Image (tube, rainbow, N blue to C red; front, side, top):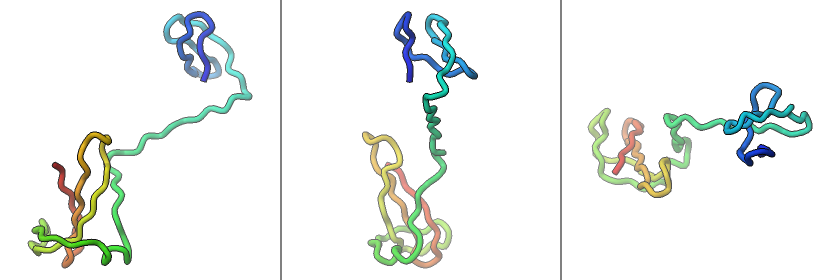
Length: 103
């Protein structure tokens, strides 16, 4: 991370140069610096519990949308911002269908 010597704004990489968005100052990028690229997680990717640990989860009365069975395992995950409520996941004890509920 480097800041513009003229206006003190954060400089960004554009090809092999560092460029200030605010004043347009340009500088050759130093090859000795390590560039880190952050990849954001797709919001559709949801961690789901799998395997033998499922039998240790608590159960509750919940109607399965796939088979209509009235019992399911349940667990909570914080998927959204910390100031928002957790998401409740359910998995049918009969057919294994997994679904979620929001507040």
